[in-house]
Length: 414
Image (tube, rainbow, N blue to C red; front, side):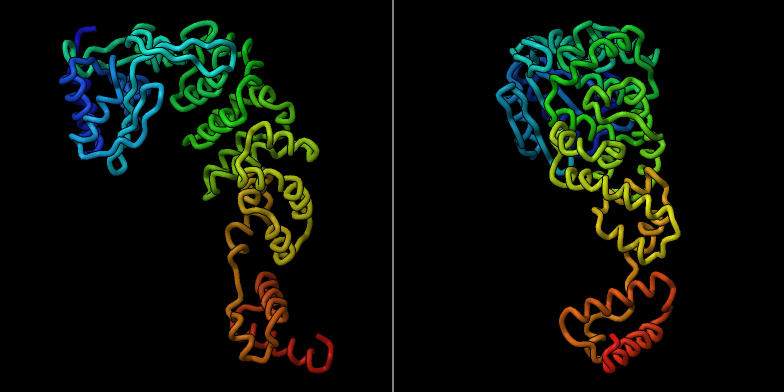
């Protein structure tokens, strides 16, 4: 394709000042060293799609770390990270740009981390996951603005297709299965027919991927603007069961993820929701398979108790009793319970009951004559229950309840 500097101009107009400074300095540094630099991957895809979200990745045919070091100095940024693979990260404020040496990759066996060697931009593009991510925009002479598209990514963008580059792609790295579904859902694309066949054939290779990498890819899926679409597709393609047999279908999980998305649920809540139907005896094994972090594991391991609480909430339960049950659970697990079951008690707990407290506090109780120590806690708990159940509606009501308690205590009935 003939060079079109307009794409570079369009990118520069979108970049915030700090990112633009790093980007401009990187182009200049590569040019000064006589090296070719390219915008690559998702940044090119998003630019062609007119997407407002741009993660800037630059590939240099040559020493990327040297280029990054110069760019950081010129832009008043900092060289935040370098790796043995010839990659560097430059930061300034909220702006982050990754700069890498063009490389080729070879996978010794399915699931292995690749063996990396410095190479050309052509090899670098051909090692990528999908055609729509295998394009590059040349940033330096002799052809700034030239679009490199060796695998037909631009045509697949127009056709709204997600296509792998070769038949062993999912075998080399089965996390591409999760990325393919996430990409399909994010852009409203569809998996190309051969790619879909390869995915079905190679889904078993997910067992070659470490729990940490699986967890990270799932976390990125759950963080999508509409995760329910990807969750439904992963379920349809039997990807969850390939990750762990206990992740079998049993309820409308996609709708539950949509409800979770529409609340102020913490990100950790996605994990108990994913594991909602997992038998208690398999919960520990699943947590190990996914290499869950401590907060994630805590939320997941509380799912059996949350399921039991949900059964109790289905009956005629007073707000104070529902609150007592739910206070014992991690908050992310309660969010999963509410999203998964739509239990009225769980929804009310999150909206109102969880933060409802009596007007009287400990010092006020002491002034009224309540004995210091555990008795203060017991009275506060009684006041909260009364407020939850509508027995008291004002501070005066609370004071009368405390006076009744003290009177009963004086005659030995408290």
